[in-house]
Image 1 (spheres, protein in one colour):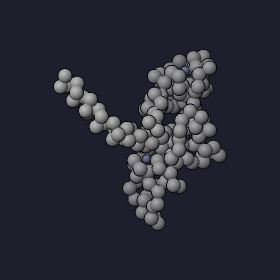
Image 2 (tube, rainbow, N blue to C red; image 1 turned 135 degrees about the horizontal axis):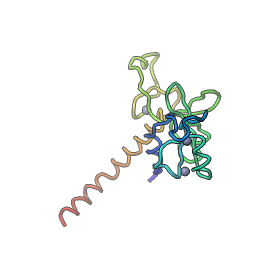
Image 3 (cartoon, rainbow, N blue to C red; image 1 turned 135 degrees about the vertical axis):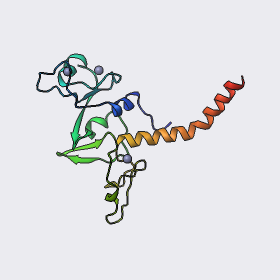
Image 4 (cartoon, protein in one colour; image 1 turned 120 degrees about the horizontal axis):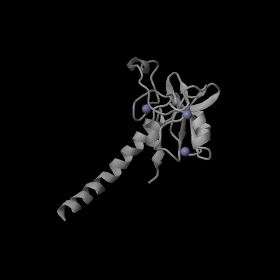
Length: 162
Ligand SMILES: [Zn+2]
Ligand SMILES: [Zn+2]
Ligand SMILES: [Zn+2]
């Protein structure tokens, strides 16, 4: 299988970030903007939780760009194949979006759009395939289903017949 979806990825994409840490409510850096690849079943956590509970774990930091979660390319590309995903330079760092963003329908009219996200149809700046990690994951799940569904239904038929 060419595109492996690591077990923590779906958890990363569905985690709510930038809540206030219940354990460090009074501290200045209590926003939960960290995600641990080793403990991916746990929620997002803050700067202080990281240094106590995830000291030697691979942790990535989530950032915000106009209310959307982004992650730095330098951090995520060490642990994930991000080929095909549109990247942006925001505050002089190259980032990518975790999930697709709703967009106004009218924004595609200007001057003929050449590149569109294969999943959500968002217009892209460059010849990338996806607007976000989420859309890339959807695509690889789709490919997985198309490829393995015939085998799976054959298997289930065998199980039922026996
Ligand atoms: Zn905390
Ligand atoms: Zn951890
Ligand atoms: Zn998309």
